[in-house]
Image 1 (cartoon, helix red, strand yellow):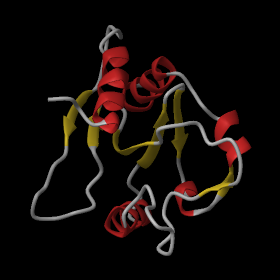
Image 2: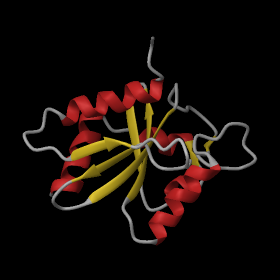
Image 3: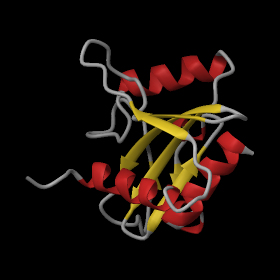
Length: 142
């Protein structure tokens, strides 16, 4: 059975994280009774972070990218996910969205996922999987 692209992307970031001599504890979050919880919780000596992963099958080349817009046919973030992230952010939690694509991923912080952004902006912010793993390790462990 093949994995979904999002699952494969998360695993590829975790493979890069495994190369670090010190790495945070992480746990896949899955709650069949409550929707919206981010995909992975990372815990380290410095911080706990929550990351919702999404995967875009191609690098957007033009137009505007929306992650959570209710009237978009299939937004990347569901209403439940967007609400969970927003409410935890307001509580002071460290919540993030990483949008993966074939060439890497874009880290979004401070509720940026709630706003549209030009495809060129998305493309300019793509980081490698190794860079994303390094960011996770540095953010949680220092």
